[in-house]
Image (cartoon, rainbow, N blue to C red; front, side, top):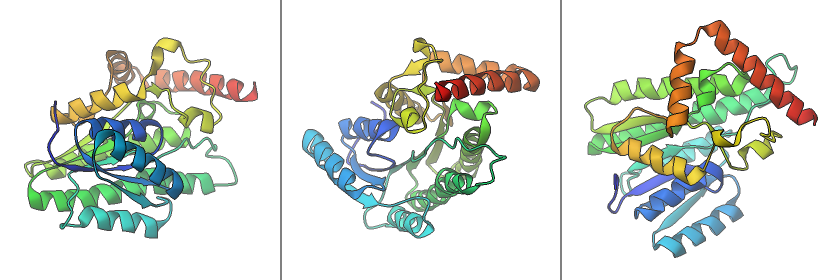
Length: 265
């Protein structure tokens, strides 16, 4: 396999969905884990399961990444030279379904704090620590949604992709690698939490979370800065980048309209 040895990975949002899939994939390869999530009881339950199944050490940090003090605690753990973190997965996130024109802007604030500010700050903390050792991997979960124009979530994920590429430029030649992962529709509780049934999405467009994590980590091992799991979504990514922008906005309107109809149903 790609990454192995007595290494340690920190995964945010590591108790469910795609984050849990990354945690399982890394655990199978013998990585010790640091799981970050808000629910401490759930963290300890998942940690116990992973430690028992894979015979690894699992540390937990209960933190709400919309709280700047909590983010700083995670950053301090990444900077700890006495127990270095070799691989960071910035995965924590959620769908921001609130329109830009809504009078209540608080969901946008929280989304930006969790999926932009925290990602950048933790990437920087990890990158500085890893540079001193001359090795390390930073994996930021973006999305194919960042290639379209469907509200704040698309805007945030476009930022994550661009920020990760910029970080990769800064890290060039240091031995530390940054990779943005752009999955498509993944079957997790992410969509149900957002009130998205996904019935308008063809079955062949849905991906398995464990397969996405495995393929993404294989791309990390190959040194890829942009990882797009599966041929079908590589094709989507290429098409979206070559289509005229008015066409991309038209596609975005159609998909957004379908999602709104799902919610009403």
